[in-house]
Length: 289
Image 1 (cartoon, helix red, strand yellow):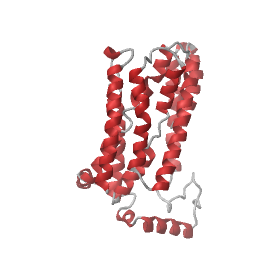
Image 2 (cartoon, helix red, strand yellow):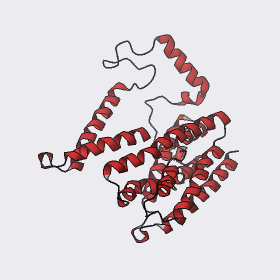
Image 3 (cartoon, helix red, strand yellow):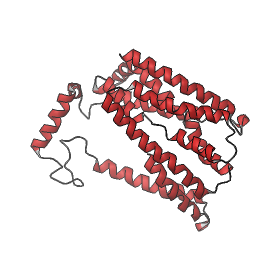
Image 4 (spheres, helix red, strand yellow):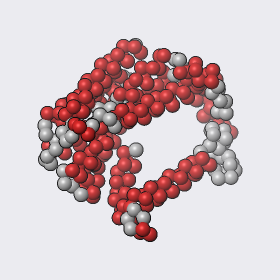
């Protein structure tokens, strides 16, 4: 996703220069061109992605499929040996309302939903307002796009590092907590200093804040590991992502119009949220022990 953001910054810069072509605004061309590419990829994925390892043969994917019969047997056997619960449902079996209710009422997964709702909140508002803040500091569109890239590259590196660290140590909650510990000093700095003036320190603080190690990938695997059935895993993955998306709605309301330009009240709330997330991760660790 960070790679897509980097590419999108340059693509958007070029497409927005099409303003006036056929009398249309630049943002209309941006939505049209990127929307067409997204639609093409979605349709292609629908036809090219197979339902299962044993159903790869088709006109588009090849009449012989991707695997031999022996390879299909090995894939299915390894998947079932790794997690026997995967054999409890097949890929065309629906989740009935009764099964949905049973999955939603599994309170052992609720702590992970809470984590999904809060873990990105401390960095969401600065991320959303970064480009606007840079423009207000006097940078043009191209300079703003360039200044955003270091934080996105840093985000990629730290996310890969913390994912490898969690896999190496086998410790999920404490490793995830490192992201909040990373963000906390930078959030405190944003609250204390005057971030409305252009300086290398302001850019440095925001860049390092947004380079925080994101545990989203690990937490998706974490909640899948805690789901003991295909039914529960299907619903819990969807619920977790719904809570992650909901935090975007909350994060959009942290920085308010009456708090401009320093957003001291908003930054104070982010410091509290980051501190609260540390407590939440500790609580989740105790609960799942």
